[in-house]
Length: 343
Image (cartoon, rainbow, N blue to C red; front, side, top):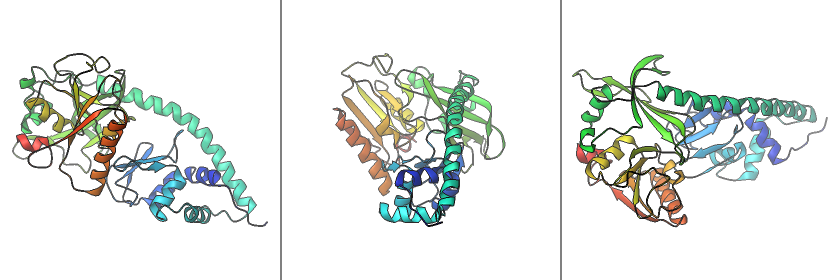
């Protein structure tokens, strides 16, 4: 049979049908976490800025939360292999897929149909993943006083007693399974909620004692992970002076948004009157959902000169400005972040 070309949308769907194989080739420094391939950027190095969906309704969709880039599987080929040239990306993908004759195309089409059916089942799995994320948080201890969580935070010079009470979003799990070591470890769990207060994901920080008995992050390749899709959500660490829910926040108040729990709690210790949210990732600082009446935002930025960090912060600034908010950027006077400033 004679060779034929396939339209761009079909090529992208066929790439998505082999998403994991594509990810391993284009992004070799990454690794699989659940239904996603996680890596540092389109250059394929290790890290956590880029997520590429391997299954479910979003199979083939990717986003780099540091740069704001994203798209479908063919867009990933263009970003990773052809410097954004879509025509060259199409040629590369056509060859990679082995689309030489009509018979091959029909085989690939059958794979796409099978993948679509699997995606419908994947939607159910995603909902189940959210239920499990909520379940692991509810199953942990709500009282973190006199636990390794309190000890870990004190080791970072974060004394929650100065706030009057610990954030209710934080919990302690004495035996929390860690896939990296395939056994249970103590962990600090944090609830990530959307604007309506619905639990959408759980942030996990595994803990361990060092040789001197001090509680620190466990010595893992990845001591922090998030279960569930958390885009737009936040870890609510401080309500500020108003004591109102996020949805009912006062129009005149400023909201401080940082990336990590420790950074945000360090600021809360020094400025307990502020409402403070942890976005859990730099990219999510732009995506975080805020009520319409909020017009002032303070972004708690790390002192990070990496190009991807600068792009991520710029995206957050631009996104909040576009929403009509006054934006200020605050940086630690020393060290990498605000926790370094108090230790």
